[in-house]
Image 1 (cartoon, protein in one colour):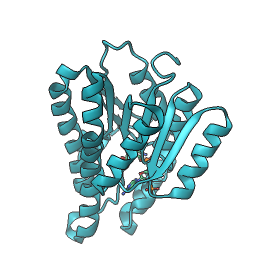
Image 2: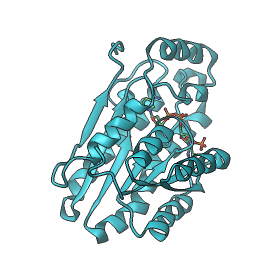
Image 3: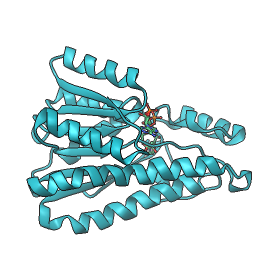
Image 4: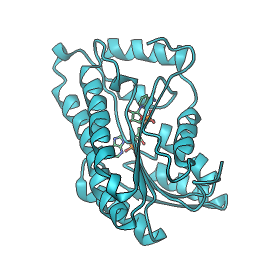
Length: 248
Ligand SMILES: NC(=O)c1ccc[n+]([C@@H]2O[C@H](COP(=O)([O-])OP(=O)(O)OC[C@H]3O[C@@H](n4cnc5c(N)ncnc54)[C@H](OP(=O)(O)O)[C@@H]3O)[C@@H](O)[C@H]2O)c1
C-alpha cells in the first residue's frame, strides 16, 4: 500500500498520542515524511526520533493549534524541510463532555478553539501551498459525534458537525486546484481522549464505554492510508467507521 504514501510530506496536528501518533507510525513505515505538531514537546520529539531511527524522515515542532501563527509555522516547517506539503491531517482535538446545565463554559470555549478553529487554521496554513502546487490532500478528523448527538455530547458534537460542514464546503471550493479532501469520523478508538473529560459522572460512563468497545488506533491510521493511497483522480470524501461491536 506504499503507493500514494511513499515520499509524501504529511503534517499531523495532535501527533503526540492516539490517532495522530498511530498515523505517523504507519505512514512513516510506508515512506512518508512526517511533520508532527502538538503541545507535548517531549512526546513528539521522541516519536520523531524513533521514526528517524528506523530510517524514516520526521520532524517535530511544538504547536498549539489555537494559535494561528503556530499552525502556520508548522506547515511552513514542512515546506522548508521537505520542499512541499502533500497532506495535512487536522487531527488535534479534545472531548471534555458534560451536561450543558453544568456550565463548563471554559471547556466549551476550548473545544471550539481546538476542534473547530484549530482545523480552520490548518486549512488556512496549508491551502495556499496546495493551490500553488495544484495538488494536496486535506484530511479533517470528525467523529461519530459529527453524525449523532446525545446528552453530554452537545458541544463536542457541535464542533464535530462543524468539521463536517466546513470540510464539505472546502471540498467543493478546491475543485479548481486538484486538492482532495477527506473527513474521517471514528467511533470509539482506544486513545487518551476520554482523559479530557472532567465531569465525574460522564467521565465514568465514557471510560466504561471505551473499555468495552474501543478498537486500536491503527484502525484510524489504515483509513488515512486508504484515502491517501487512491489514484490522484479518486477523492475519498468521507469515512465513518466504528468498532464492529459499537451500536450507536
Ligand atoms: N479516540 C476516539 O474514540 C475518537 C473518536 C472520534 C473522534 N476522535 C478525534 O480524534 C482526534 C484525535 O484524538 P485521539 O483520540 O487521538 O485523542 P488523544 O490521544 O487525546 O490525542 C489528542 C491529540 O490532540 C492534541 N491536542 C489537544 N489540544 C491541542 C492543542 N491545543 N494544540 C495542539 N494539539 C492539541 C494532543 O496533543 P498535546 O496534548 O500534546 O497538545 C494529542 O496529540 C480528535 O480530534 C478527536 O476528537 C477520536
